[in-house]
Length: 344
Image 1 (cartoon, rainbow, N blue to C red):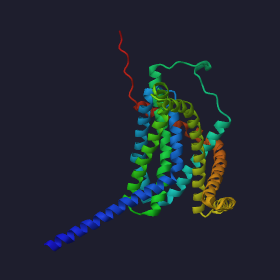
Image 2: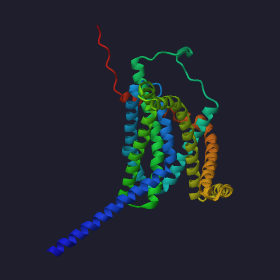
Image 3: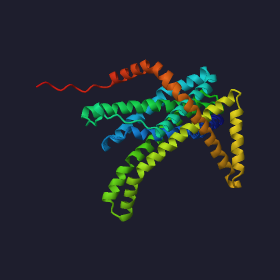
């Protein structure tokens, strides 16, 4: 009996080792997928702060929390099951969908470049005059901003999950392994992105407090630096996010073309990157090759996005406008309505 017990314990230990190795593998694969999705993550972190600009300070963190919850629902309730179903039923569709998402990133990045070069005037209400919002208007505006942020997050989250799926599918055929990695990446990236957004959004408030109530001169100096530096940092983050969209989107499309046998563009970019890196000191060859490759992929993404802008505005938007209006109408109908004031 003791021999049987020892054998059973050996089996349990072996199973525990296999389980631990599986967890380690899932963590490693999640790390790889997260690195590949880094460009989309940067853009997500760069885009979100604009959804809380203009609101009272006490509403900033609740708005971020609402968007983060919506982002988790996007990833875990909708995109994760869809990604697993895609992996089981139509693995061949992963690359085309990735390329479609990459093209969308190129379009978004190119449109941001266009807006930066030729900005549109902001509407100020009837007659072009600024109007003071009422509390009801502020609540409706907050709901609208949160909906818009969650819809934007859905697109970016779909790209993150697709990149993750393409990475993990090459590493393991295990259904539960893929599910675990997708869940780890989805939860981890959401916490990182919206934690970073909360820190960014509240940094100026912390700066004001330090500048006004700091007990030491260095603290007050740091506070003034935060207050003056955060607008510059947000603009820089926006530029980095735009560049990341073009680099990641262009790279995804180029890699997809290679998988379909159209490797000329990818090989040309690689050769140029290697040639540029050869002109640098030996210790910088790897970084120089990566930087040149990313820059060329970004330029390709910008060119592709510029071609897509008229296509989207002239064809896709008019075709999808009725469907989007219907979707937004349903979303508004599902929001709780404020109680009507009692008659006196």
